Image (tube, rainbow, N blue to C red):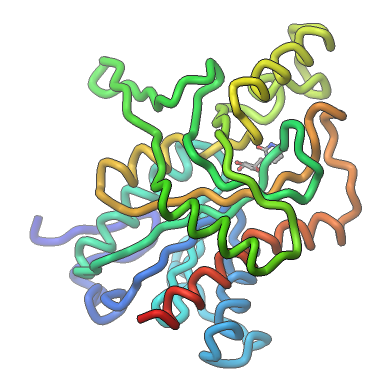
Length: 282
Ligand code: R2B
Ligand code: URA
């Protein structure tokens, strides 16, 4: 291609000098909400002593409201919205951005929220393997009318390194476990409180308990395609999600705003510590 337009980032190879803008990126952190990713970028600014964390930071994708992107030294923070289609579009453009920028040795981490299974709220789950709602470590996509199945394994050495970081921080419970990725927040995650529900409470509990027995510790909505696309592209990747509730105790997220804000800072803190540690080893 003479020109590559990354439409949903509002960036293009003829209008932006990718190697100059992004060539030094070594860590990409992605998360659902644009506000949270801005807060993460500001937090990293303070942690890496690259400026005042309270100062405003420019959104590189200011020309579009699809995704928000912030760069702090070697760290790129990008929002991906909710669900597989939204993160998948972002990842296609991110992977091309890294390629055009000639980036090397990049680690990609999803920091997010999830519903825990048998976990105290506020626990952090580092994903060993993303599984589908039938508990299989597969991501299924229809390509040209045919079903293509892709692996959802994640880098186990990176997961271990992240758990080690959490032990060093020693502020919240962190485990490595399987993560179930669903297409929906309500029926897709066995909730009883959606607008539509086609099963009983007993059936719901049986399903969630069998998920726990299959090694699943949390449920979210992006990890499968994230793992599959990073795998295929040869990118080292991890998924670090805080659990906002224990789904064996209920469906509604009823903790106070302040408690939820603090929970959401936990993956940021863990990944911030990990990046600082990695950079100090260089
Ligand atoms: C976690 O939280 C969102 C749903 O509330 C979804 O993006 C996810 O994976
Ligand atoms: N995100 C999810 O996908 N599910 C939950 O229960 C909480 C956050």
